[in-house]
Amino acid sequence: MSKAKIIINKDYQIGKIDNRIYGSFIEHLGRAVYGGIYQPGHETADKDGFRTDVINLVKELDVPVVRYPGGNFVSGYNWEDGVGPVSERPKKKELAWGVIEPNIIGTNEFAKWAKKAGTEVMMAVNLGTRGADKARNFVEYCNSPSGTYFSDLRIKHGVKEPHNIKLWCLGNEMDGPWQIGHKTAYEYGRAACETARLMKWVDPSIELVACGSSGLGMPTFASWEAEVLDETYDLVDYISLHQYYGKENSNSQTFLARTLDMDEFINKTVAVCDYVGAKKKSRKKINLSFDEWNVWRTGRADNHYQDIYSHEDAVLVGSMLITLLKHADRVKIACLAQLVNVIAPILTDDANAIRQTIFYPYMHASKFGRGTALQTLVECDKYDCPEYTGAPYIDSIAVETDKGVTLFAVNRSSEEVVLECDAGGYKGSKEPSHIAMFEDDIFATNTFDRPDTVKPKVMNDITCESSKSTCTIKTKLNPVSWNVIQF
Ligand code: AHR
Image (cartoon, rainbow, N blue to C red):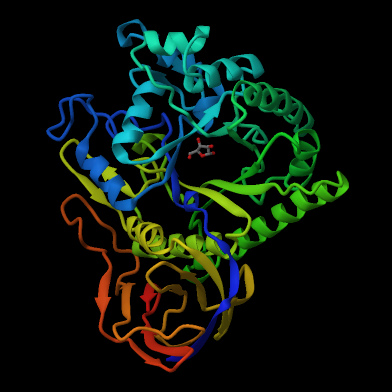
């Protein structure tokens, strides 16, 4: 059994957390839309065909924003195909994923679903096969009140009030050779710049996300961001980052240390943004939109891109959330990819909707991680594994919320760790709480037959000693565990 000490202080503020850091993503892919959020005839479907069992789980997660409609899908998508009378919408060959898109769900239906689910839409425009003109028309269709061709078209389609979509992605993963309409950084930078100008002329209140790299390992990483921002710096607000981690042949401790790479990815992207800003002698800061992140193990076409997540995956997801929060000063948006069925915390079959293991750390962070992020100083043992040297066993972040302090902590070790946490500036609470996720079998999963195999447990092993202006929390962190400590 080893020991760890965490020091928190009210004054060690990283920054105010933008709630959009708890966003998610729904793409026209696999069973995310059809059979996921939309299944007319399902026993819980409402009059619009939306599954209310799914909506209820989305509400449990309290998702502030959902990116739509892709992903790779958007790079071949014509938004006009998904509006107007459903019977007149074209069925089309969808080239990103090699299926037929029926276009039954489009912009107006998705906006309606988002309202029911209590979330905002983050919309992506197609910069693969299309460009500035179609994008500005789309903003006009969504956001202009009336009196112009596209706003009146929306009204003719039965949607009187504008959707007022505030957050827009300028394409998706344009650095990836797999992307429909893949571009060089310069080609994309120019296209994004001209598109951004027109979109903001139509609606100056929108915020724009330029495509960054599709992973730290991309050969063009860093030079891509620098060139794209050279062309777009004054027009965009965020640059995107995407990252998925698989297990491949790595052992558990290597897998759980993957967030050291995520941390590096964020630090280096911030450095490039600030380098371009410095070169341009600009006072403006470009922030980060980590708009695709998750564990992605095996989900492929033959299983509709559905991953079945283990307890161990949930612990890495917890550590990814901690990593995002450590950068709350610059990461303003993040989207767990995705939300339903496709590499997702919610899984449906024709009867039920269940919570996968990763549902829980995401829900905990979204519910208990709103406020101001506080740096944690961690003293703990470290380990070497094939890909990392000196990886700390404990990963943590604290959040000052309106109810007190939440400490999120992951124990990467296969042994129990005794934790002492000193929190300067906080009196603590007489009733501190500790919720933990740990399993004897770290590969345990939730299934439709046994949906509650892996779920959080309320612990009774926590104490809080208070003095006037500080408190000391003592508890134990189980092997390979995700922990939520509140005081
Ligand atoms: O989220 C699944 C896919 O992963 C997205 O379509 C794409 O952007 C990424 O490569």
